[in-house]
Length: 273
Image 1 (cartoon, rainbow, N blue to C red):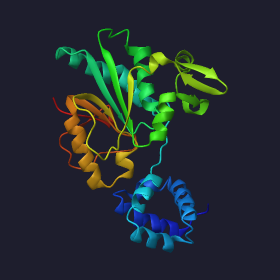
Image 2 (cartoon, helix red, strand yellow):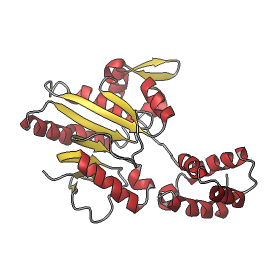
Image 3 (cartoon, helix red, strand yellow):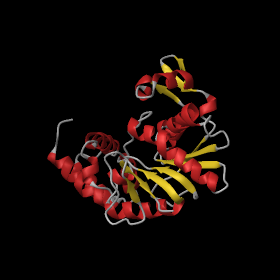
Image 4 (tube, rainbow, N blue to C red):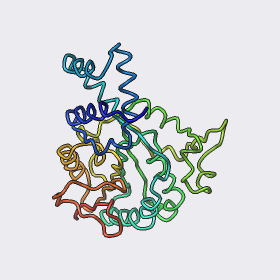
């Protein structure tokens, strides 16, 4: 589809009403446009003016449109620098903290996990680099997404090579079994991950977490007011000294005094002890 000023104007009208922000959709607007266009065809509507009228006459359609605006882009080991930092410094630091507190479980939440690439990347990283170093610590990963079909795909855990191409080759060979052009994760790497359907805009599904990954979702697509509401819930869900990881091109809203960005990476924030 070529660029159409009418569609841009339509999205700029729609998104604020969904508490979303236009800048986050500039790169993915074509995908949203295609989805909305198919929806209009299914409703037998002739144009955007008709769809505007339909939205105003049928309030339930806003929930449908909300689903059409959910864009998931994920792959294993996305943003390698983050994973290296987690393995080398951040997770070991969290482990030492929970040891001092007399606990033996490291609790991580992957919010907006899509098809499972992020939480499984963490499980593989733990097994390959950290498990032998910390044999007394058990890893528990809660992985949530609003889309049931993505969660079903995550539980199946079979992926095309394109999803795994950034994963270190040795890890890929150790963790996956190739079959019919797809790579299926071995069961031993799946056991630490629990998948739960959850909308990140709703109350947090867990507390006493040491690490939350909320990347390329809240701080890209939602408006600042909603970002602030969600951030406060994340603050409350983290243990003192816990870490929040956002996308490499994301930042928290201004004047969030509870979190301090780490000097080693501005996409990682720490809750004070």
